[in-house]
Length: 194
Image (tube, rainbow, N blue to C red):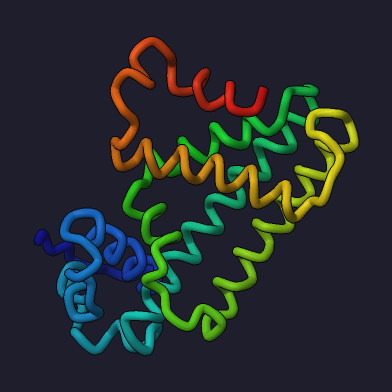
């Protein structure tokens, strides 16, 4: 594991970033406050100024990931509305790209590794915001005929299950090769919403 010397700046952000690097390189089991401190070259007690334990660090990493995902989805939604694009395939493609570009972060965000989520208010707040955004997108699409009318929560479960399942299969390379052989991934994903 490489060590970076840490100089003045935002220690909390450096700890979060280093924690994600450790997870990406060595898996969740290698993550500890001591290992994160060692990687950035601070004392092993320094992380405790920001995180009470490993769970608090996991919550911060996962929260940062959800904040990034929310911002990207919101931007795509606003652009798609402005140019009258079919929004659901755009949102689905953005979700997949986020996961493929940051697989370790994405897997952590939806892993269940974070215990007692309710003890981490920032995590609850951003995940609730993302769900509210997704429901807003569904209502908008239902209002202009891009989605059939119906219960928003049931529609959200159906769409998210489809997109998240597709994304997980892509990340884990579990699609049979013949399914992907003659079709671009983007086109294949978009075809699920036609």
